[in-house]
Length: 430
Picture 1 (cartoon, rainbow, N blue to C red):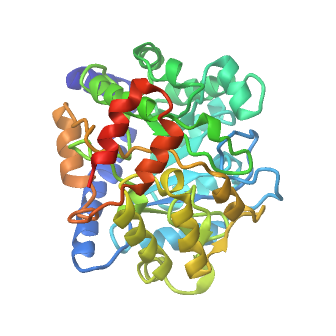
Picture 2 (tube, rainbow, N blue to C red):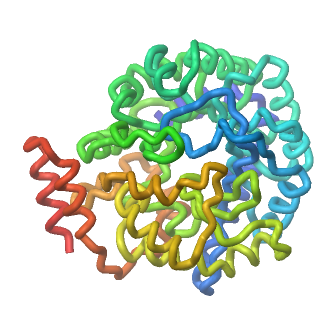
């Protein structure tokens, strides 16, 4: 698998772009992770990676999206983006996830890429604005990897994303990226309506045939103005997705990313362990994109480092989260998140100003945390990469996790006797 993957990447990605990826993302990313580990030993928390949502403007209206796409258009300025990145680079951060809305609506996006040739940017996009000319612009700047979101087949994509011909238009943008020799990926928010078709070897082989280099699977979160709790995965589906990812990593020549497990298959939350936080188009500093509350804004005057590392809200969030569970606080303990927000009088960072009510509407369910059902990495590349540079960094060590939420989730989610053994195992965890 490894040598087939290596051959695919080397023969399809332009050498200059591949070098940018290896050096700006790979080498500098490892250094950033090492600096993060040294900071937390001193009790200082500043993430190794930042996600930046640069606009709320989008041409789609997806279920489960946290963005107010119907609100007046807002965009973070290039000046503020440069401030964030310049401040962060002082502490070893050179990788940034760029989100929206749809990031390619931002008029200064390529100015940002060009201003920081020493950084690497992964753009989360629906792909529909990526023309051949735009793909060529990304090839020219060289430090960008487009990650095209595909949420289902032709029928499911239209229903899930509120548009017409969504699948085909996204595939067309993806093909333009691949044709330009860009390192390109596909992201999927797994839910009940797409898991059977997109969590399959057939789908991955189709992407390999297209020339796609990596895929990113993550679980659907029932958040936002079009929240749908019915789409959230069951315990069985979450375990199935983890098993599938581990097996396919050792079988198919395509990189498969997940951000919720360490090398031993133990669950984690990147924002809870502090390796990643989020800044939105208003400059609000949030734990992660789906937790739309903040106490600090980059316009508050201090450096981004000081604002994040000194934040009592973020500190309490990390401690509260890791004390109570190893999964997603939004899915498993929305009540706990609400209490935290009220305690710190954190701002609702949305235009709709209804996120507290949305938390009340979330029915507690399963996330990636399934104690007793850990599935370790099989392939050496993923095992050692995670062991050294992507794990819980001791955030959960020695903590007695509360199983009450698991009991609540069992009552609500494990309705089929087929999964009784899973439920019993979870309840037994001390």
